[in-house]
Image 1 (tube, one colour):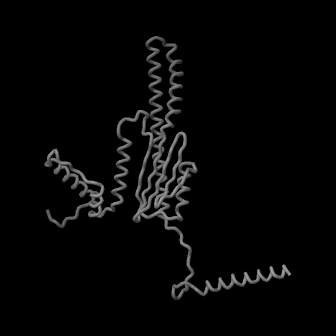
Image 2: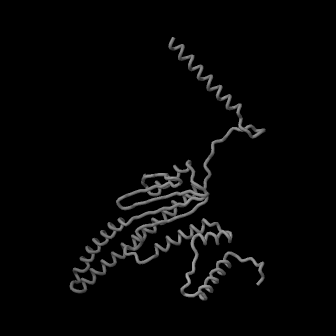
Image 3: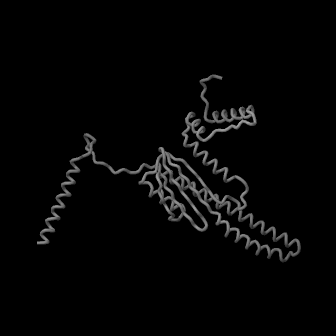
Length: 267
């Protein structure tokens, strides 16, 4: 194979995957294979990939693994956490816009605080808790949205169970005996499945809202804060000092006139 051949991104991914499989077959079982996040950043940088996308992909992978891990008795996870690393840093002028976007997303004022280069917003409610962190460093900003909502399952399952018992009793009464008992159990199980599906939908809705909020925050940070224009002379492009002197003289003249008027009024 010629050494000067250029591989496409798809071919690179397939090539590295195959090489990893070949190494895994030949490596002893006791050998631990894998790369740390720092090593992945270095590999990405060497292949022309921005290392911040490696961090973002790792965060998304961890979140997806946590969501899919195990069996959820309630039909879905009781919390959602999404992270994203974006280009640019949050300025002081943009903090109010960020806070407004967060409050609109959660429909609560919440509590905001700033520690160093981290802006944090929290909300503690009876049925939902939320936290948003915005940390800027080295030309990039890490966005983190965490929502916890276990108490939203309580009224959902309570209402479903109550309706299931009521409907099940009405269905089972005419049947009676063992058949009536099975009918009651079937109605209750159906109600539980419906409640689990509804709670899973709540989790998906929370995740979608978090993604929308991340999109809004990324857009705000990407926008360059408006700077106050500086008067410049057309010829030199330097600061027009004469204009500042004229403004200062005008303000001084106004102050002198006001002083003379006060003196006449006192006389």
